Image (tube, rainbow, N blue to C red; front, top):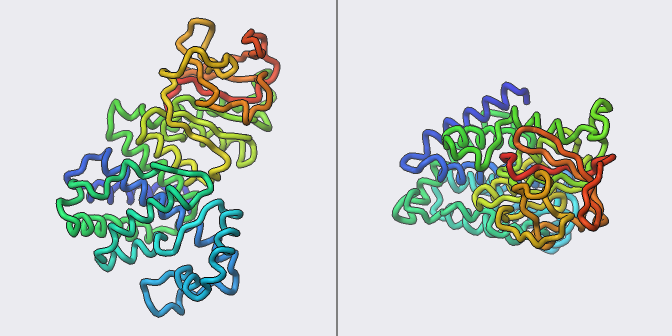
Length: 378
């Protein structure tokens, strides 16, 4: 898909969101819209991997008589004794499992047929993804989506009908485009930006404009000892202590390549934004074993923490707080207590330092980790 098509998809989805939210404010509707896009991504990625895994045994969609069935639901029904082995293999290859009844194709079918079970299917599907899909537990991933909200309707049938309308329109809009996982990730980022623009001064809580994000990510990926040599080949870890929706971390990953960063780590105090960041990581193909986003407020962490875990915001007495090791287990991913770090503040100023086990700062030779100070939005 071309860049123009990607932008057009984002605009189409935004127009649908603007038309359908009704009495609901943009911030509330954002959580529904982005969650459905996230489910679409997980489903598409999973079904593509399942088709590859099953090969000739994957049912032909054109041969399915009941339009409500998906190829995987047919295969599950025909091969009950092989399901456990299949799901084990899928967890190994794509790192998660989604049962057929919770796949986007089935949810869309329920929506288009105005099935009264849609709301229940979504509730159970979201709970399954949070607790069972991944080896990691993504508890609370959809906690901000209230499917029982009066804003969807006062009665169950009203809420179900509203969800049928929303999902049917999203599916219709997306059917106009040939989508792939990269396209869906870009559409997700576009919608985050649009919702941020509608949030005014609150936008900084979860979104950094891409132009600023691109500059910051470019700085931290340069060789800190000799920037003229260009980009570093490897980062052991990249931190963002106020990661918002995670796009700054993803920009660094994009620059370094899928295998250029040992570990992606972030911290976010706002629960809604914290969930957006976790979805954003997964939706951009970052496996659950490759990142950790923590629901923490860096300004409230203890000053008694190990100095080697202190965000590099400046010299002694600066505004940076220190983190308890259990709050942000850097040592698990960095090796020893000695580490090289690059701090970047909101103005894009890099500060190099080396901190030894006693907390003494020295001139840094090489930076193996990239840090984003708490002042850097997103």
